[in-house]
Length: 151
Length: 151
DNA sequence: ACAATCCCCAGTAAATTACTTGGTATTGGG
DNA sequence: CCCAATACCAAGTAATTTACTGGGGATTGT
Image (cartoon, rainbow over all chains, first blue to last red; front, side, top):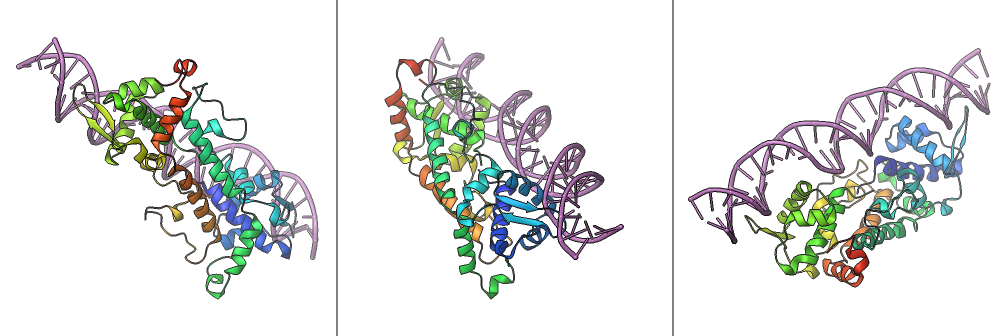
């Protein structure tokens, strides 16, 4: 039940982008460096994020990435589902139609459990916006963690 | 973020055991057959469940498994954590001490997100007991799904 | 022109998953 | 007392997934 690096790195990268977004486009290299991530791996993540319109890109020299919308309109759920697919604990309760029905075509008790877990997760991630994370970050950015963290 | 078959099969098997528990010990073969699971794979799961005292076993002929406690004292969380390990979305917020700190030794915004997801999941699974699932099952066991489901 | 950047596709080593196989130990019933 | 049924144990393994890397190509400001 762990998130893969796609989701974990992706959220970090998106927050980094969000924090620097008002200074104009941000190049992937700088995100990778600040966050200690591989630039070429991030390229793949941003390709998916772009397809989902969570980021916009400017090509060519002086290019870079921008948020696709205002930070208050982008949720952690948007980002994680884009990168990880459905966060449902079992295919039979995933939001997209992909999850085929389980062999038990009738009533299934455990299915109810998976639904409750899925809803519990969604209830958390769909109610945290990037803006809240930016605020958290700024409220805690002091000399100490400027040395080791973002910024 | 999907559960592995350990957790999915394990919960199904434990519910099957719980439903049949008052008839005395239950052999793994019958659980495997009713639930359409591999008996030898279930052996591994029950070894772990026994170590966690969620089931008791009787060896030899006429042996089998029994719940380790009353169904109202066993939660879905007990079962899933035994079989899956911590359900935290990232190592840095797993309940057991195993999860080493992330590279950011200071304040970490995303860590807060992982904690909230973890707590959301735990809040669901620690508040569903086997007894509730048995009740769900019995309330829905009619002729139709007796033909295809458990019992 | 050219350097910086995004973009795209394919490959791959390592880890994990989902089992299977082949045994051994224990016990109740005939 | 034997034997069939059961739990218990350790290893192996094929398939899948993960977490990247590499090699290019396309676009654009200077």
